[in-house]
Image (cartoon, rainbow, N blue to C red; front, side, top):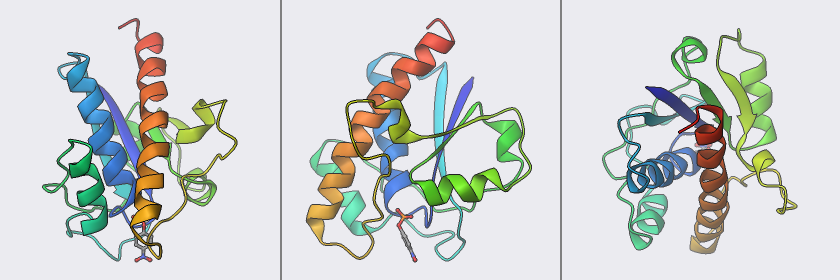
Length: 156
Ligand code: 4NP
């Protein structure tokens, strides 16, 4: 199994959405027995909690159910367990780079999307619903190109 971990700060807004959207794309491509996704946060404040209701709602509107996810914190062993560790923004990436590295390829989601000028998926925690729709659009574009990359890397 090829494993992909999405990482943000709290693991309740952005990375659960990325996990849900990516998992949905994988299933639609018929690759769910080859590729699996998970998500985690660099911070531990929300461990055990379901996603933020605003993320659950924007996902639901786009046909993706993320309601059963529960937040967890990044574990250094994730760098051995996962093939790709995908940060949402530069701050998440910086945090991850300071941990002992393993075999995982570390990247930032939007670095794989050359036509977008933004490189960070912005933290929507203090925004209104528009912020979550914007995050969905960015995550959705990033996940589509990430899946292309994983398929290329593994000849799938
Ligand atoms: P996330 O958003 O990193 O996309 O899950 C946040 C959620 C919670 C907090 C910060 C960002 N917080 O400070 O509690």
